[in-house]
Image 1 (cartoon, rainbow over the protein chains, first blue to last red):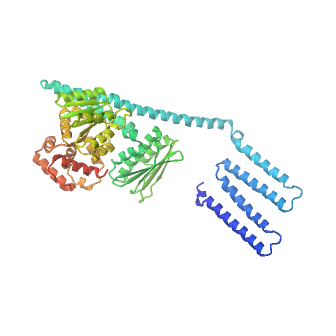
Image 2: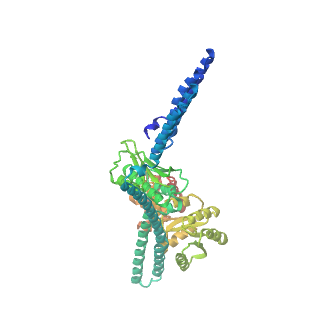
Image 3: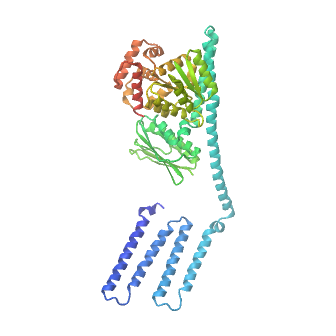
Length: 340
Length: 216
């Protein structure tokens, strides 16, 4: 597909049409100037129209993919050939309709092609292969469901930590503080209470780190772009966020994308300290596209720990990742995550 | 000092109210959600509002949004955010607009009663009280600035304490040095960071904050 993008099929067809029309007009003009005898330009028109029709068939079939592309090409070429035969019959004065049999044969071939194309799996795939295809489809579906359920559960755990254990510990340490204030005359008891308060404080801090590791509150509150901005405030080189997202991706993808950005910014800060980073977020073709670009020294090792960890994260979400990091030219990491 | 408090969890709200009352702070109103904050302020004209970040109905950031709105509508009102986490985006937004005292503390800091009362006092008088975690986040985003590298470790410590909102004597106490030594550190910080010196305590804190914010 990539090789075809070197030229634009639309403009090729347009140019071809324009040249054919000009030539057709020119020969008609010549015919008129030379006395307008037997109308021979019709054969020139005919000669010009056939390549143009073939070009059009090719252009039309490109709108389909895989086996359908070939089927579409076959059908349109059959139409061109049948039309050409009937034209020749008509231009040569009619008579017995000899194109009938060849046209029926050509149509028969198309019907065969159509039948094979539509029943490809049944005809050419073995039973085992069919079972495997179904199984892969099913696994892909259920894996997605599992991941989504897991993401929802984790967010619930985060909320429960915040509203439950964390709040109770804060209330507990507050009560301990009040108790401590009332124990001025019992220094030993006051000391024990103070130690208990310190323990509660440690527990609160640990729970906060735990909750943050699941998903930071700003991600749930305001979405990916703001959460990325928040991450950016920690990078000394400065981080620019460019987002064209119009809706929020599903939680699993949003959280995954957040950690992809977090790890990429950590990598950037480590290998290109103090260098500005740009993070672009966009959605298109059912994919969430994340591009993280820095102007650092480049030459990132795709097999290094940082990038391998990132790749595993992306693959777990059925995503794709590309790295471009020529030495001396900065690093671009591109991640696409499925986002239906 | 007249205080209102907006916190959806009854256990915490009542704990804070009891703690404040025991220490002679007048709590004139309480509410459970963001609209309640604006109602309380309009009704009671408090000096200070203590606000949680996550409030009903969505339990996201409506506390911060309501606090920012209250700061804009009621110049001179002190706002102290109590949260279970530090979020740089929220602190920057809070510090960016409005006049009047402002603070952002982690909830567990309430358990250090003298420091909490000190913070409440400062914010209600137009000063600032930032959690040391907030300051750490703000400083982390600024380490590219070479002028910060010029600070000695002791000067960095003094700067962090300044940003938390501490007075000279508070800093001297925390670092166990004389107030004279603190003043000397501060004038060194001002000259190294190229900040205008001023007499008023909280204005210098605002200057420090502007310095932090200029990057974000």
